[in-house]
Each structure stands twice: as C-alpha cells, then as structure tokens.
Amino acid sequence: MRNVRDRILVELKMLDAGVVPNTNHFQNVEDQLKMMSPEDAQRSKRKWRKLKRKALKNCRANYSGKIARQSEKYAVIMMLARDRNT
Image (cartoon, rainbow, N blue to C red):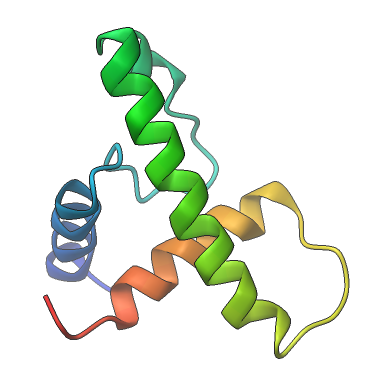
C-alpha cells in the first residue's frame, strides 16, 4: 500500500466484499474469525476463497509457477486496490 488512504480504501472494499479487512499480507485473520458466529465466519471464508480464485486467475495469466500463500493474499489485496468501480 502506498499510503493510509489507499489502505483504508482497500479495507472498505474488503468489508464491502464481505471478508475480514486485513491489508497486511503477513498477518492471519484467525482471531477476527473466532469472534464471529460460525455461520458468518464460514461465509467470510467462502467469499475470501472466491476473491482469491479470481485474483489468482488474473495473476496466473502472467505467471505460470506455484504461488506462495502470502503472495495469494497480496494478489487479492492488489486486485481490490486496482478496482476503480467502488
């Protein structure tokens, strides 16, 4: 993230998409998910996986190798950051 404004915008986009807002691709969100009801946590995990598949589909068009988990999260964050529709 370039600045605080961009980070806040991405976190708002994450909330809008229904996932736990976390722009630090080295940090896990298990603590936040434990505070949610099991149904809400499962829904959020499903939405995250959907965003991840979409981001990796776009990423793999440019790169054919295996992608590390931190890079997967970074790909989702950058996809949301580039999205100008919201």
